[in-house]
Length: 75
Ligand SMILES: [Zn+2]
Image (cartoon, rainbow, N blue to C red; front, side, top):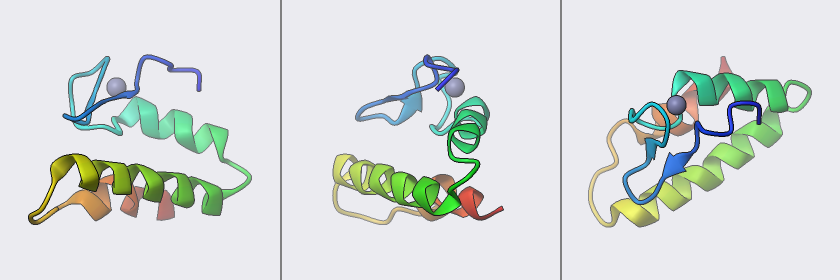
């Protein structure tokens, strides 16, 4: 990943660089660049991140988590 600083800080899942919800715009661009030939692999990777996010968040609703971690990989 070219933007190595745009990584998630756990358990808050804020970008270590932007201090916004991860994946930030820069992280998404870098992830798309890395997986330009295999969008299924990108979705599978983001599903893994979503699972980690859910484990850190604990029980309760995860409103917006699907869009945040997976929805954008389909566009
Ligand atoms: Zn960032």
